[in-house]
Length: 112
Length: 117
Image 1 (cartoon, each protein chain N blue to C red):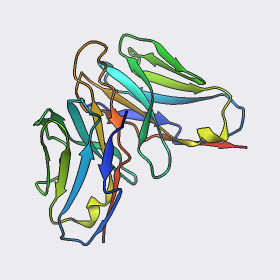
Image 2: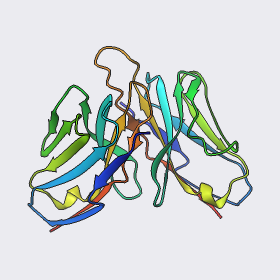
Image 3: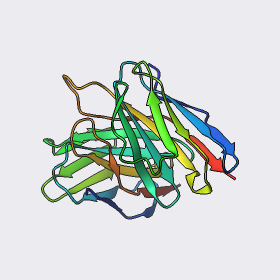
């Protein structure tokens, strides 16, 4: 059974700092990996999707990497801003059209 | 274009009552998923639809939970005889059809917050 773990559970950083969020999964036979952002009381916003054949994806200040063989992904946020404060969730799917398995998230606070 | 929508946004009910939660997926998306997010539990899968069929219902926690999808579009999640442990945020997601540039990217609605008193 696939399990996804995110470390740390919470993180507080000063504005402008670069930071890394970690995600690990137990079964390396994944189809893709998605990173989401969730603001309090809101739904999930998709940030980046990495296919199993890819090593990384970039969007603006965000860069996500995938090392499938070791079961790890990282989300790198450059030059953090207070508006980046949210919970970041990592999720994997084992094949096309299958449910996502989620980690419990990292709650990020960026202090001005 | 319009994203995934869910209604109601909030629902407060008394223990033992039935509730219906609605999801409108992105137009043209054939796959639809229901998830539940509880405090301390994270996000857990409930049921998956491909068109009007539900090939995977493995996440439904009990027979009080059921869901249907009509016309390959709108889906309704029904909880009968609600219990306090059913209190959670219920999230719906949709995904496009398999085909060119298909990656099973799931797009989520804003959720329905259910409170059972």
